[in-house]
Amino acid sequence: MAPEAVVEMEDIIRVVLPCLPAPPFRTTGASRRSNSPRGGGGGEDRISRLPDAVLSNIVARLPAKDAARTTALSRRWRRVWASTPLVLDDSDLLVFRDGGGGRSAPVNWPAVTDAVSRVVGGHRGPIRFVRLTCCCMELAARHGILQYWLRVLVAGGVEDLVLVNRPFPRSLRLPVDVLHIASLRTFYLGFWQFPDTAALPRGRAAVFPRLQEIGLCATTIHARDIDHLLACSPVLEKFAIIASLYHTRSVRIRSCSLQCLVFWKSLADELDVVVAPRLQRLILWQACQCMIIGSVTFRTRVRIGHATELKVLGYLEPSIHQLQIGSTIIESGTKMIPSSMVPSVKILALKIQFRIRKEAKMLPTFLRCFPNVETLHVLSHEAEEPDGKLNSKFWEEVGSIDCLETHITKVVFDKFRGERCELAFLKFILERAQSLLKLVIVLANGDQASVDEMLAKLKSLTTAKRASECPTLLAVVREGDSAWYFQRASDLSVSDPFDW
Image: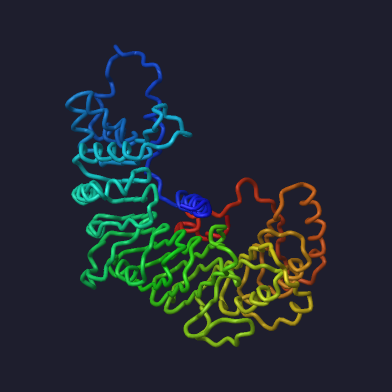
């Protein structure tokens, strides 16, 4: 593998791993304290007096290696472990080649694979959660071990499954047996080639009768296979495509159950929401260094077809996304008609390079596409090669915008740098937003000198004419890590995923 490819793969790994579901309990680490002194060996065994249900709860919270060791305590403990739904994270089974357990030492992939086989083969009971990110999947597939695991997972009724193809051979195809695990509720794949569904029967709506969430991470999948997957998942609520940079040229969404679609740091020629009557959220985030290859510019056409319940949309980026609503391609100055608007959207997030004229001019057009927006998020992105700024005269001459003049009550402007083009836009908001209650300005730099400079520039807004009688202006510095992360972006219980 060329050095450039290694760097690229490391970038993709850093994107994928934080997006994977974590075990229901924090188990990692307990089994690595095996060298600690042991004492009190002759004390009274009060734990074994506890009811089986309590013991099962205890065992479920142990790393898989330690949970399996409880079987050596007594016949009763063997029964407890066998009846406790298995929670397996193979990072608890790591074996290092130097034998010392140091994190800097290389992982012994075959040894981890063998350890997983021992745990899976020795449990023989119900299975709740399996997360495999450290096994040598190529070795497991070559010797039939992966197929054996899948058969055990089917028999155990696994509910939540994470399968990552380590150490990342891209040519490895996932066995079609994975499409037979009808018990799944959550299913995440990483670095695989998805099974070819061309020869499978169409319209099998009960293949994944319980599946509610699926994530495809750096996984090669074709449009027909996405169609098949969605058609086979009648209660699917969340579909995430993460770090897909290679072969997913077209993503078409046809689903009567889907509520949240996440396109996270991925590339495709087209993201087409064809029919999704229950879709509430379309989350787009493509800030990723590994996406920029050479001087090639990637653009994705985002088409919104039948999505009458769509309430949350963003981040739309003019430099990356070409928006199409119905049959209308949205460009600067596009004349709005009902068929080129999405009136259901209430929360809109835009990422704009204000120092690139073409992008900044798209902002009013985007706002006209969503006439009932109530909360607007604008992330100001610093342009590497600015081509000129829009002056205040442009904003003065912008025509009527329904959402701004009637519905918007909150605007969050993120990464404010104190530039004149940013101030001109903020002044435009204050002068036009008749229902505005709150304008939040998040400063780009937390350095005290920079903060003082930006606050001094913001004082000019205090004397600006205001369309709303009493909007609240807040200038804030975000503390700690300001990175927007996948779990929040895709969490349906969070009312505004952009308000982080």
